[in-house]
Length: 303
Image: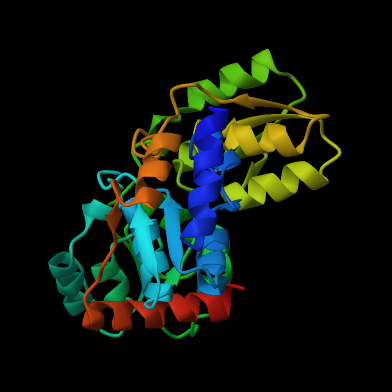
């Protein structure tokens, strides 16, 4: 393992590359990254980097976002088959038809969406800034929210905005069931339950706090509580435990795993840097230009 880490370090320097990793990635992948974060943090970091090459350890929509924000740089997805089922639950044709049925509505799309969906949207959001952005949009305009109905319903609950929700969802967060939270509380009395807004309403109301992955990391670090039940993808346990050695973190269930987020490995990162693996992410200019506007508006409103 040490040898491959040394290879990656040398190749990173040779290619003037930066390695970005989502908090749902395997621990070994997170540990070799230059930056680890949630979708919003990764979007910001991608917009700031000066590196010639971006190795994006995540799923395709994340690498697309980095490519849109950095058109002059090479963005490589180490595992080309790492997709997002939620992002694939709405097509550009379906969104265009939805907009036609609701003229005058603003389109707010979760960053967990394809470049084509971003290009048809007025503003993007992440789970960490969705509520903030919704509150800043003109109060006299209704909102179409795509593709995640659960994040959308949470934003609606928090803001009271009139919203049309697309019927998409995250299969991984849908694995979280109310019974899991009830059992976890019995096993760890006194532990605080933190849940992601992609979970269902029935589960969210059983938690102590609804937070993005980045929000969970910040909350756990600042809290006087020493035990937490984490109701999101199990990969988040790695940075939580690593950065909070005096605290204990428990998965609400070991079943809450995203197979696509677990595709990236150290060998696939090395191969991507060597040019023998991975795939450069490219987006046609027109789509990228339109998608960039919705991303830039997100960064302006959600910062």
